[in-house]
Length: 180
Image (cartoon, rainbow, N blue to C red; front, side):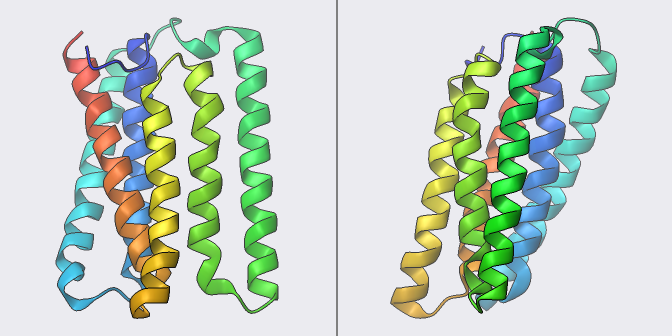
C-alpha cells in the first residue's frame, strides 16, 4: 500500500474527487498561461477526467459500508470542515473580487483548499493528505512569487501546480484501490 486511506471505498471516491479537481484546476490555469504550457494544461485536464472516470468505476465496484464516513462523528466533522472551506473560499473570493484583486482568487482558493486537507487527513486516517495540503499551499505561494518575478498570471501557475498535485493524488488513489 501507498499509505492512503484505510478503506478501499474512500480511496476510490478520492480518485473521483481529485480527478475532477485536477480537471478544474488545469482548466483554471488556462486563463492566460505561457504559450508552452497550453498543451500540458489541456493534457492535464484530460487526464484528470480520465482518472475521475476510472475512480467512478472503482467506486461503483467497491461501494459498501466500510468508510471513514460510516462513523456519525466523522461525518459531522467532515461536514464542518467542508462548510468552513466553502465559506472561507467564497467570502475570500468575493472580497478579492469586490476590491479589484481578482487575480489573487486562485491563490486564496489554493490556500483554503490546501489547509482543509489537514483535518481531512485525520478524518480519513491518511497522512498523505498532509503532503497534498503542502503542495496546494506551495502552488499558491508560487503563483504570488512568479507573478511578482515575471508578471505571469497567478491562475496559470496555481492552476498548473494544483492540477499536478491533485492529479498525482488521484492516480495514487486509483493505485491504492488496485493494490488491495
